[in-house]
Image (cartoon, rainbow, N blue to C red; front, side, top):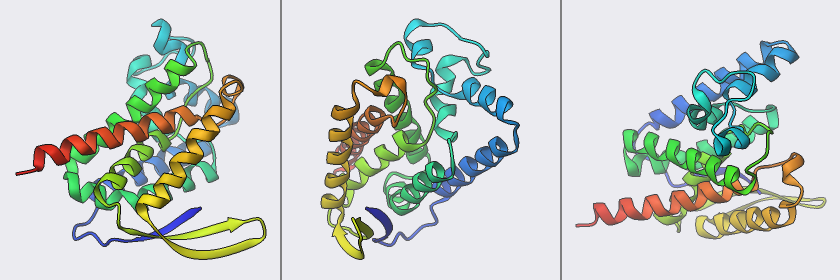
Length: 225
């Protein structure tokens, strides 16, 4: 399922969402212009390495932000065109309404914290992995969690592929995100014995999503009269 648009207009310009998208693309274009060897060094300098987080060490090349500062920087790195376009499309569709609901500064803190928690969950599941963890998907998973809590009845215009069948359908947000979460959960269970040698960080998606659900529920409780 590819989300194209939500039928849930926001009344304010999603400034933070736009800035995050622009920042991710600027970093990605910088990566593209680096020679392959330097690109690998750059990614390893600013990615999350689970081994570093769990053992309190800084493997070469040295991390300018320390391994723990990379819990933020890794969210702005991406490994390819499909990676960044997919992530930024999800953020564009779901981020504006969550930003408007939370407020810009709260939303930036929320987004960043979901990304941090996502990386920590991944590091907890694979404590000795030395593979770099990069991408905004953990933080964006948190945005989806918040969207499910705050706008469950919103409609998502979706492009779906089932073998050779292609169609555009409208799906309620709560059902759309439930299907998305089920896919992440099943994929995590299937890949648990293989992710240590490479692949999608499914547990980061799950961690970010659950963090987003919890934080958005707390926000709604605090805002309730």
